[in-house]
Image (cartoon, rainbow, N blue to C red; front, side, top):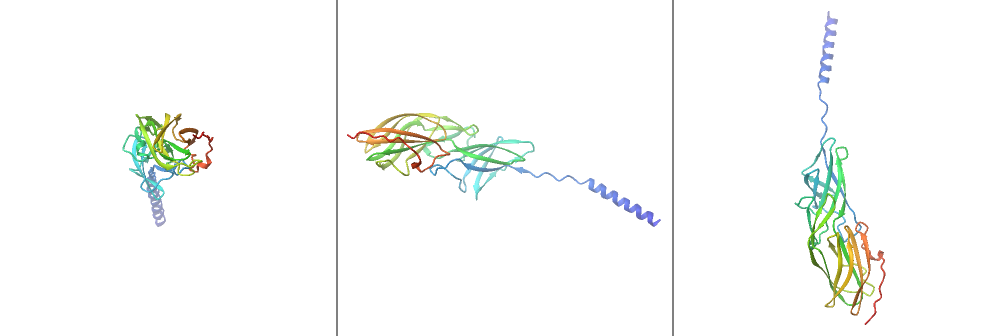
Length: 273
């Protein structure tokens, strides 16, 4: 009888154990949140080359706005964006931060601030969006050989525009006269460092430059298309009362180097008067 009771108790305990094990819930999946890493596509120190602490990005992830703040080499999103199973998020980022719609970001070259944007995708299985930041604007640089003082360089181009960061397209605003203050003495073979430059709205055409040298204005026709994300180096030569264009070099801003000795030009010899 004792043996039968012990056998009955053992069977009962086994049944309870099996029932208890079968009632356990499967472990819940952990939430997965969007992460971002950034790289600025440029080799120049004239434009923004890296992010610093407290820099901010406007980020749109699948229609949800969030702010990215940079600190100690990484970005923190506020609010965080949770990734759902089977979901693919289109991620768009703009720097500097703006409260505007990501498809209508105002850009104004009178502020001379580099404007960057990028797009990427993220999923629950690949939650890190790799954002290769591109330049929305373009840049003009000027190197003038000769003798005398270059006071300023003026031209007419759009002063502002609107960036649709999801497509990387800049729409043009109204044209205005823009002036780059120089106040620098020329060198016989041109400057070898710190060449004057200025951000401009792209996707337009530059017709002429007006250069003030020693209190006198000289206008030079250039007729050149300004494409997005490009650096244009204008080389001019001055002698006596004559200023002429000797060459234009177009360089993608992600390939541009500040060492202008790496840029080759056709030198122009002007007659002396």
